[in-house]
Image (cartoon, rainbow, N blue to C red; front, side, top):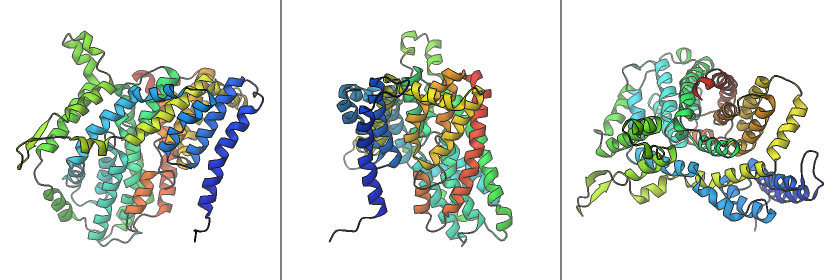
Length: 494
């Protein structure tokens, strides 16, 4: 006997059918004002893809693969052109960077880092300092490590603290740690291009729309200051909403437990040392590689010092760094093997970018981005460009709370670039600021994998309402800070 239809199933079927229906309806309509027939076909294909992305009828990477047949059948982009996006520099950056970060995960260095933070003398059993270290420990590491593994690690630590201290779910310490397990990594993820999938998608689409390749240094020079400012703001908001000083009377920090967890990891292994040095060398080359090679007189090799090439080079080096010998065979064991690499490479992000890059190219080809920008200009009228820029940042920040950011970015960046040309504000800085706030998916589990992971792994400690309140305040404050930083500091960096 088949299971009865549920609202979720009906919704999925409805949107599954609505995508192609809207596409073929738009394709055959007379061109809208300001749009030519080819542009209507491009718009039709983009609407189909965007609708499936926004409603998550299929997993996002699967929908991205649909760009191949959708754009191919409509004749707006040949399949081989879509396939060519696999060789895009942003793809190689993901490929190499996820191998580098994979060495950290495989060596348990991330776990050691977390427990080391909690054993700092600065904490000394103080609940407020514990929350501060928790905020910055999760946030700063997420600038160079994937958000979701960090979220899972930190919520597991929070649950262990709650159990060891017999804390109730409504205890402010637990409410603080649970919300920060998702929010702090999301904020820290904007620090460098390695901090999250949205960053790489932003870089790829900016290269397509504006023809500018954002370097590791350019992104990080704005991203890292923003991380520290927003993490402090996040800590202040958390302290205001869930004051641990008041609810923490009689609360005893589990110093012995945290110390035992760190000691259980043993001395720093050769594998962890290798992970540290691979990342350090990669960061040095990303930030100063061209300058170092120029100083050494290697002018021809300077052009090799791009972020994607360095990522692949250092990722490949992980296969060449020996860490020990196998006791049985006597063969060398290296910092990374192929099975580990396959497990850690961001295949889903790579596939997702195929659709995102193709989507941006089709928007440009059909002039859809300019048409949408003109429509928005007609609605907004003659207002100051800075207000338009701020509105785009603010809208993206809250739009990303409802729809997954990876679906929002391909739509918002071309519109932002188009409006920048009309209203006269900096298109590159505007696109970067919009990309920054797209990381702020912190309010709902249906749009944030991190929030869903915290609720699922909290063993009853996490309360969804806390994410709504805290996420709303953080999104409001962070959008203002992001706009201000990119507007005031951005011109000095880029």
